[in-house]
Image 1 (cartoon, one colour):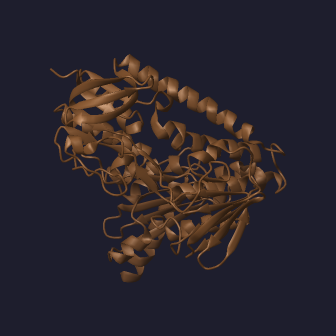
Image 2: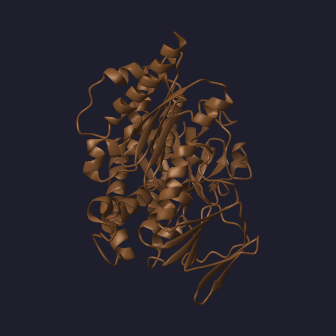
Image 3: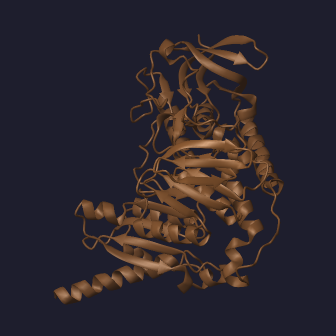
Length: 467
């Protein structure tokens, strides 16, 4: 008889939810993770610390209040790294306690160490003390997550040349910074350091950034970041990064040289699978360390599941949690609904971006007719009260059945606001529901009604001309 019904490798959002879901179904469950990484990358170097850092930046710089109190307004003049990290350490500590408490309360055994496969049902646990012991399980869930990808040609030192894991351990706020990669992580950190007053240069080999987002939203973000003295170098590739006594020199293949105090690489992520001995379980990973799964998150070996960032896109904490729960239910023979294709995306730049459904470009490419309804925060009483005159909400509406095809939000609270649109879309609601609904006043949520009225007025004009 195996030691456990389910053994989970990794305690990040996916692994943690898989373990608790199986425990709630009465199974004997164990989780293996390093003692300093309970909660995974999400808690220690990813989602939680970066979003907490963003909150500290917004609070201490007073950036969001400058429309009200003038461009020179700052809550604190000389912001130090310790000002920023004290809030982060507080939140991370609390979150780790919450996770340990949840696992304990649900009688999930937590083993401190790292695990690797001995055979398809057995894991070798290497404890911190150096001891090794074997743990067997009927089902195994791989939830090891990822680490930042590091180009071999770059000498990382964690102080002046770093990745998104090291950036939280900076000794001081750099006066100037080069960020390589204009993906989600790169743009979030570019926003934060620009808000702190660093002169940021973003280098990206593609022609643009965040190409999954609405074009108008990206243009707005670019405008805001340029206003904070961010320079963009699109279509450029880094040839070399030189470390000098007085800083770094980033040499682009086009010949340009960019001096800066620090360089941060944000060039994708690599699955943490190289030390798992996957071949002993009959498994393999691709060159990015990712594991292939089916719609139930099963690997090629039916009793072994994989969830979270280690399986690739969308690699978000929110989707990882749902994948973990879904995998545990399937492994335990419990009925589980398919994860809806309608997933919200939240990007914590300054200002925030969030969207659900399709973009204007995607609808145009698919020859799907749509009408646009827009609400701007500056026209909302709540927008004026909080000092956000740049935010906007955009609804993409089908003229045929009046359903929502996409919702795009930019500005304060975008990642919260998007769930109203997600709920309406998920329930098959129409724009008319939003027109007739009463929203609290003054709120940002009221933007849904304003945008809905804008869209229906345009649809009415088309109908009148057609009559």
